[in-house]
Length: 232
Image 1 (cartoon, one colour):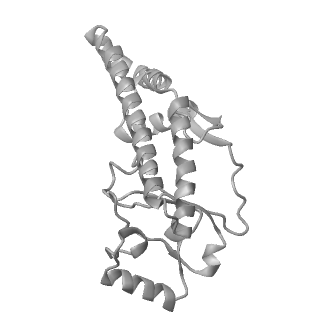
Image 2 (spheres, rainbow, N blue to C red; image 1 turned 30 degrees about the vertical axis):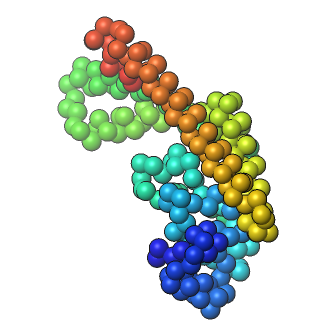
Image 3 (cartoon, rainbow, N blue to C red; image 1 turned 180 degrees about the horizontal axis):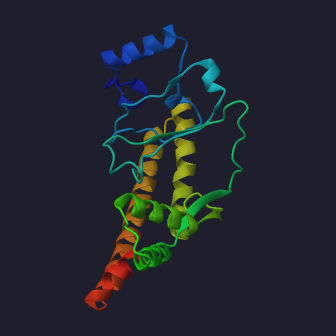
């Protein structure tokens, strides 16, 4: 809609008026304005995307976060990703702090598939493309395991998590200041933007360091071993 509301844009346009009229007529909530919403800008320094919900739906929403760091959305869109955590009735919520990732041993998949193809060739069996696909699927299942993690972002360093904790604290302070229309709102906004910038810069730096280490690891070996190092 490109609706601009006075709360973020300073001035409200016609589409912002239409949005508020629609919300009032249908008795909806703008979730971007509630206390639980972490972050505000949905595209650059603007607020263009809104989450609307009814009273009944509002009861099921546990948290809302706008990814102003663009860690997950920068390759997908020029708008920031909006994450909602919803607890539906009758559906048990996951245990907080206990998450899982699937780790796959790619070298084992390649070895098992190579052995299976060798056995079939010895028996004189014809191997078609769909047979190879099924073999890889089966060996992927065998070579994968679910590992429990206790951190929201396990790949982040201690320093990134520290900076992100600071950012979250300032974000809560900023939401309270907006709600109460405090005089130091601009100063808090500047501190929040600085905190977001610190997190992004640290992530970019560590990502570049990891990429450089991987590049050196792959290139500083005989050419005929580089593919194996790349996939290991």
